[in-house]
Image 1: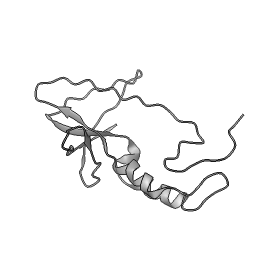
Image 2: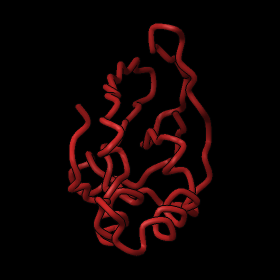
Image 3: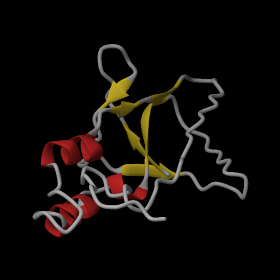
Image 4: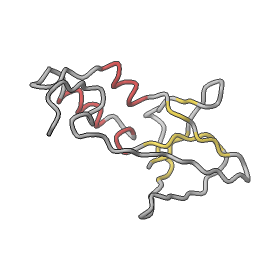
Amino acid sequence: MYLRVATPDSNGIMALNELGRPIIDTIRTDGNGNGYRVLPAGHYLLLDQDRVDDRRYRQLLMDHARPALYTEPVDKACLDRWLHGPFGVVTIRGGDTAHVELDLIDQCPWTNTPCVHYHGPLPP
């Protein structure tokens, strides 16, 4: 996972993924999926590799510009939200210890392309 400084909304819980901001750190997990990082006080977004920059976004726009046998073209408005958010903000206060749980659940292979609707047969 990657960490980017965030500017939260007025409620302090959501923020946009601003691609112009640098990635300030990474978190690697152990075999049990636990990762640890010491951070200064501030607001952060936790991002996966696909949302660090717009490479996957641009590739999806090219690969799914037109309908295919079992898929519709990519929904660009949906893809914009997928890349930029808003996402939940992790807020660290000075001297605090924060525990953040982020459940990552793998998707079925026929539905794992963001913002592309699959309408074909399901595998047996």
